[in-house]
Image (cartoon, rainbow, N blue to C red):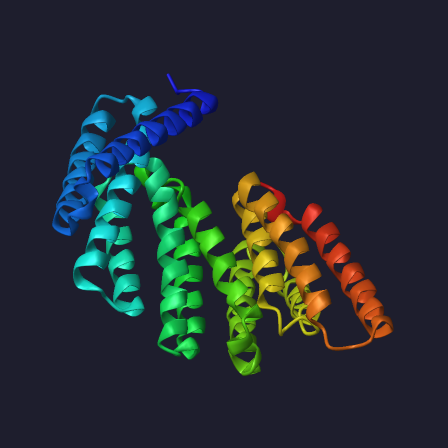
Amino acid sequence: MKTPWYIEILSFLGSLLAGGFFLLCLVVLGLLNNKDLNLFLGLVVMILVSVFSFLQTRRKKESFGPILFSFLNQGFCLFLFGFHETYKPEETSFLWLILCFQLIFFFFVSNPIQRFLSPILFFLFFGFLLLEYNLLYFLPFLTAICLSLLFCFSFPRNAPEPYHHLPYSLSISLLILVNFSFFPELKEIPWKRESQSIIFLLGGSYLLYKELLPKISIFSFLLFLVFFTFIFLPTVQTPGIIASFFIILLGFARGDSFLFYLAWISFFLFYFGYYYDLETNLLDKAKMMIGSSLLFFAAYLFLRFSPVREK
């Protein structure tokens, strides 16, 4: 029997308080002043949680999931604190450490909450790592990798039970990556943002090819492909808009309501961000917004009654 969501939230908050009181007790006793102890204690907690996570999975006790997730991340924070105080690493080294542990948590901690968050945190911190190294021209490649993984794992057969939340994690990761387009470093070099948009345009075209071509004529497919490309020409500097629309297409194609609603929420947010980011007068902004809105509405009507929605 699946544990109700509110019980899981209460379990998480309770374990968070318990762990917080335990750390507070260590602070009062002065034990956290020992850097090596912090490092060792955090590592032990993470190892124990990893072992217990697989034990509770075999026993099918889902109520322990939020508790293990809470203690895992408290142990991780304690480990990071001890590591920072002991070795005084640079910011890039610290980010590499977080990336490595997120991969370890994803594969070696049997916890659905952690497996949902680890890909998001991995791509988020990887983006900041590229920012620290001033290697933002690799951001489109990272976006392409995330997009390919999303397309692959959006098929239920490719995402077995332990990883069934992976498409949702990758969708959020994709939206986080396109958020970097609003950073001043990317605004200075427009081709980096445009390359992200081109990647999504190619991904959307491939998705349309796989989903539509077996159901409609080649001429109708080419017409819609031209229409799909034409929509995003004005917004090529804001890849978040076309990324959201790609996830909308994917949600329609897979019949996944979470992807669909997530994409619509992000679409409106990116659209308003695009509006305020335009360096034009209000009249030109209004014309562009009205024209784009009509095109998007036409695309919605097509999707609403197209063969993509038929399952």
